[in-house]
Length: 309
Image (cartoon, rainbow, N blue to C red; front, side, top):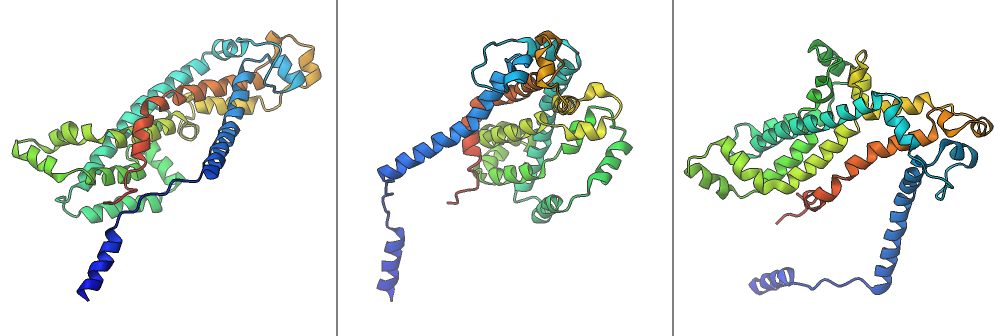
């Protein structure tokens, strides 16, 4: 019986060298990835080229990869015709910075507290936080809370309700639980408090999950349009860029016909397809520039909790 158990143990613990994928499979996989990359890249390139194409050419020939002329008129019109877009751009940048910082700060504090085993009723508090993901108060109660707090038509209404991101809190909690407890115990022996441990020990060694949360939160606040539509009813100076882009698409839904566009000069055409594409590029490119700097942390961060030792 003992020998049988030992044999089973040896079979389970025996290391097996991973088998490399066959050459045809690797070739097929590479071609498939190239095809998927082109499927995602081609529409983006078409939008980028259309943003530099005169409106009269788009009205006459439609969208094309090789226009006969390129112009910066669409961007000049976008930023020069009205100060609304520039103001919305600054509001969006400010909202992204302050909203990401606010949510990351309080969410990480809550995640650190729930990750400590000595916290009383830790499991019950974690379940209570998790329950908010399953049962929501709804749109009307949320609006009533924001209105009764006097945050309607203010910038606070765009980021204060999202101070705690439940899903991100749970992910960060799992990440903090993976940190060695000996680090915290050593710091406490040296007289460090909870805040000192959190800011000087836990956060510096948690760069992957912090970077991942920054990407999630920054993209969310940058693309925010529903909250301004709901809470910004009178003070339109607080509108975000995505909300303004939505208004541009709605206001120019009925564009000129091809014959009408051909009889007008490019500087006479109202904002239509070309300006839409320019607005899309302005809203997409800045957030894309963040990914290269956080990619190495992001790839590691999304793997947190995927492997158990």
